Image 1 (cartoon, rainbow, N blue to C red):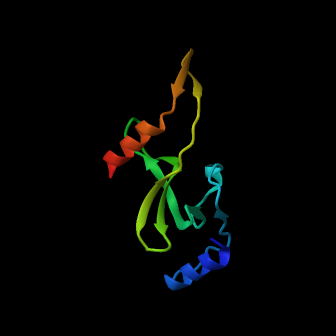
Image 2 (image 1 turned 30 degrees about the horizontal axis):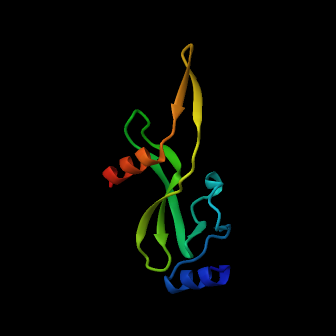
Length: 116
């Protein structure tokens, strides 16, 4: 999908492009993808509205930078897109203890499915 094709979809939907819009075909740098940007997944463009936020688990309103609230530019449908990435062990110091955390994309996907 080219920038011209994406601009045409914006026009068809009566939207204006963000002046600093970036188009991403590779989403591995998900922290750089911001509101107004477009990600192209399987040749389908999605406009990024915002990052979703964590609720519960004492982490209210913490952004989940790998979970984006989007609009499919071809259909106009609103979608939640979870950009999968794999991370090994996270180590954090809590009090005087070193605590190891493991991230599970499958468990996060399950939590998101139950949230919506």
